[in-house]
Image (cartoon, rainbow, N blue to C red):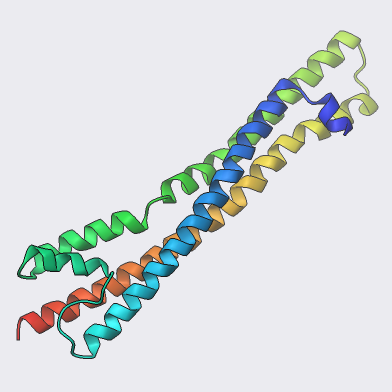
Length: 184
């Protein structure tokens, strides 16, 4: 509790910003993870459906939209794949931004807190280790908060990126199957 009582305005600002980051990355991850898991299941089933010699696409598949174009060809499949890629990568930018900026936000809080601590010591005239150590340790908490937010943001980015990559691979498999069946 002494840390909160002795914290500077910069520490409060950094804690507030990083709290917003922390909440947003977990919300994005949970929402997108379950959404992409559902889409991955649909695309796996669509590949199995196509491999079992059925005509058309499985319901809910991204390439099902290609049937709306009429004759399925490479261009319509490419358009559907681009739309799918856009959909599965939604949210990755936010996670990337948070992972790369949160350590800098924490560092900003640390630098400002250290500057204020040195200014306070200069005014009070005390510059011994007992006076400097608590101020510096309190200032470093901002950097720790920044790193604490960056680590899950980076991990969530990689997990969701991989999930999207798997979905795109299944869509590529479907497109190859569809195109090979249409040339017969």
